[in-house]
Figure 1 (cartoon, helix red, strand yellow):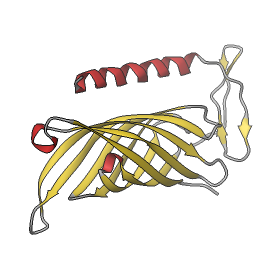
Figure 2 (cartoon, one colour; figure 1 turned 180 degrees about the horizontal axis):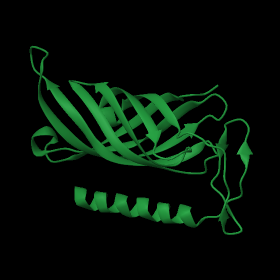
Figure 3 (cartoon, rainbow, N blue to C red; figure 1 turned 45 degrees about the vertical axis):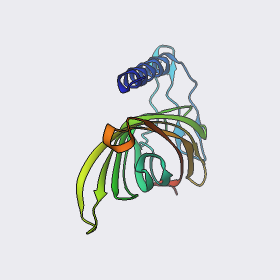
Figure 4 (cartoon, helix red, strand yellow; figure 1 turned 180 degrees about the vertical axis):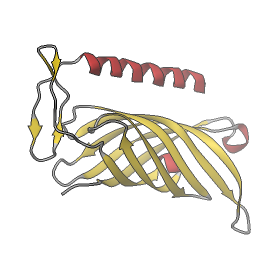
Length: 190
C-alpha cells in the first residue's frame, strides 16, 4: 500500500461523514455545563442558535505527530466541538519538529468522546554535532485517535496511533507506526 491509497481513503472517509452530518436531523438542546449546542433542523427551517466559538485546545503529546515530545494547538474551522479542524505544534526529538495536520472529529457536539482522523506532515530539522539545525525534511503522517473532552473542566485526553511515511534514507522505505498519548486543556473555559 502506498501513500496515494491512504490519501484517497482519507478523502473518501471525510466526504462520507460530511454528507452524513448534513442529512442528519437532530433536536436542539442546550448543555448548561458546556455551552455547546447541536445543529438542528425542524420543519424544514433552520433554527437560530446562540453564537458559539470553535473549540480550541492546547495539548502536550508524547510520540505521535511530533515524533518525540510536542506542544500542539488544535481548533475547529466551524463553531462546535466536531467537524473539520487543524493542529500545529512544536516539538523536540533528536532534532526539532513542527507537526501540522488537518483533522476531523466524529461525534456529537454534546458528548465527551470523539473519533479523530487526521493527515498532514511533520517538518523535521536534524541536529548536527554543533547543535545547529541544518537539514529539514517533511515527513507525511496520518493518525487515528480517541479523544475525550471533559465537559465541565475542559481537560482533554487523546490516545491512538500515528503512521509516518518515511523516505528511503530515513527509515529504509518503511512505514513507521507510533503510539501517541496527549493531555491538554480546552481554551476559554470558565
